[in-house]
Length: 183
Image 1 (cartoon, rainbow, N blue to C red):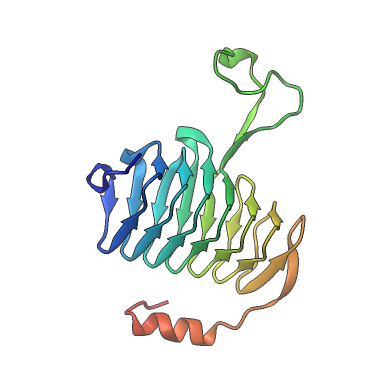
Image 2: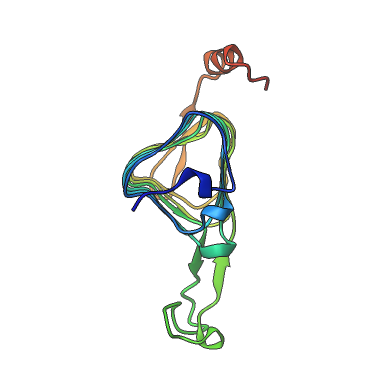
């Protein structure tokens, strides 16, 4: 399957979308400039992508038509990232959400946006749960589970993800300014 860029709600310049990318709701997808989305990306939600963004192979974004993934400028999702913008609560209030099950018999859903502020990045095999905001410059280490908002310019690791150490920001911001970004 191939995404037709002209079907997207909005798109900047220098956008690369690989073959075998599935954006289930292209009319709800906006992308800035200098964006690369690699093979195997699967998205069921609304997406808003800034400039200088990379989405690596085999990334999944789920949450249906009411979910939202918003990625600021200079952000990244590494290989096999799992962005969960909506999920059953699994508390026993009903059956799981599945085809054919009437809405009044289904479990409660938690649907909340996931936001990557500018310069936020995640490593390989990271899972982010509904409603999380990755603060400016925060980074999530490989194989981590993110259940809560992060603090700016902090590196997180683990399951659940916890602060590990601070990230240097001066050179990053200086380089972004060279590309015309004022922060």
